[in-house]
Image 1 (cartoon, helix red, strand yellow):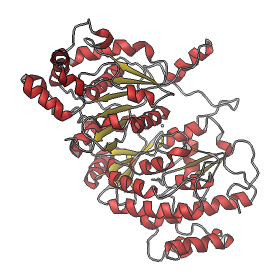
Image 2 (cartoon, one colour; image 1 turned 180 degrees about the vertical axis):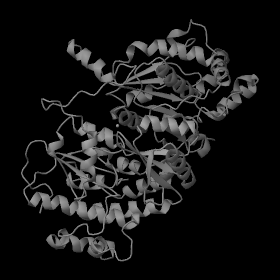
Image 3 (cartoon, helix red, strand yellow; image 1 turned 90 degrees about the horizontal axis):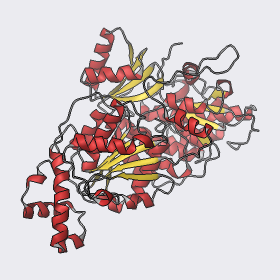
Image 4 (cartoon, helix red, strand yellow; image 1 turned 30 degrees about the horizontal axis):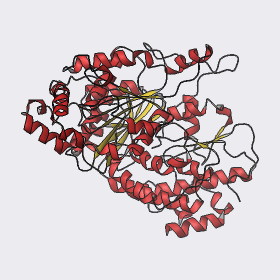
Length: 564
């Protein structure tokens, strides 16, 4: 039978549960109804799947190596059963963590056997991570939980699942999980340890993510026949990003609240059904769906206090008949860079307005005095973009530009201006750590230029002209002096996703990269690309893909049992 053979009705959606919804007896009636697929699954797995699901005689159903394939098969057969019983196929498909593989199966990305092989590998890699745990926190909004983690110095924990407005899952080292559990219990906050042995959907799964990404290179994916909403971005998949999003999901958060809210812009809770029979996602749906007014229409949610939203700004422009603007990427140049610093990136982003914020003393602003203080530079950057925040935007900076872009994020928050959808940084350690280049501006001329040659990025023709070298030396020294003058202040982390890119031959350590995590409430995304400090010039296309993905991301009864 075809996965999409049932007749369509109005805007139906199907939800597929993930790990945590397993139970002994699941799949009853389905294995007999679909003997060919059950036999295929058993052959691929090498063990008696119906016996595991129905009886679990060896207690392996909670072992993620067995849980994930079992849930995948039961979800798939449940969905197929609903189609044969006359239910419509899902126009919108949404799966929680493991369930996302069923959503992609239902959309035609791959066949049943291929999906099962992917899930087997995923389960093996995630089980192999070890040495971690997860804790569900109930009755506490994620913003309050984020403040709690910062106040208690629990920076080793990540928010892994945003399941409902009042159920959030923490992930991280077992000792940090235990400490958080004790502190929250002392505050009379309800918590529940999850039955997992690793810190799923956190920075600690990065090795598993990387290995799974390499594994996925051996597979091809078909064009999607339905709209699948990705956990990690809370936005619809596109055909060319299936492998990336599936791998990123292992170490990224499950943004279930945002995903469901996006879904409910296109359909109603009544048009949603859950595969598998556990009902856990249906209960979550009821907690996320906006309350109904007496007329039956969804009540408007109050806007977040203190800031105008991008959505309302866009609405005002459209109401006035103004054209819809492209999303923007505001770039902050590295030391010595001007408005041309990211021209190669702009060429790779035809659908994004790439704006390099040019500092005084160079390019078109050559006649203006150079700035040597980070605060003054950020003041200037804010003035440049303050009136251009009427469209979705992201910030990007390389090297010195990374620290300046970070400070710019903080300043925008302090002034209650619309926040970026993403902060992308490259070639620099987390700002809480001293920059390795903080004393470069003090070097004598010969040593200064020798050091810059080692960093790379200098045009060859510059070194052949003493007059040009003298001209640029004052600009470069001013920029490096600003880097030396940087003083880090401890503030609450940003509620902005952060992606860090580094070159494989750079001096940056894992600790240097990981230091960015303390500056954001969201799990950190990190990529290493081949090359030295100026690796970006060989990877504009890859950076453009990251930019476009970042701009696509929107920037929420008893909720237990928890799915992970």
